[in-house]
Image 1 (cartoon, rainbow, N blue to C red):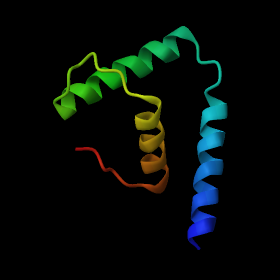
Image 2: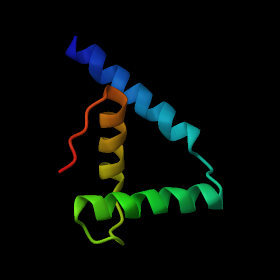
Image 3: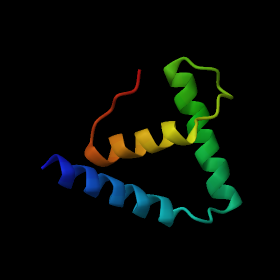
Length: 70
């Protein structure tokens, strides 16, 4: 069961990444504005950029319906 969950999570992550291959400038600006808002809500420096691993972890959390933000 754990293997199936892991495989499904990886496949879903790949599909999400493929859908955002070539975002336009407005899409990028909107995502950055959302990121700044999240940083403020979490008490971080507003201009902190999330690493690829942070983004992947949030995508997995969003996919399985959990929210582990601190």
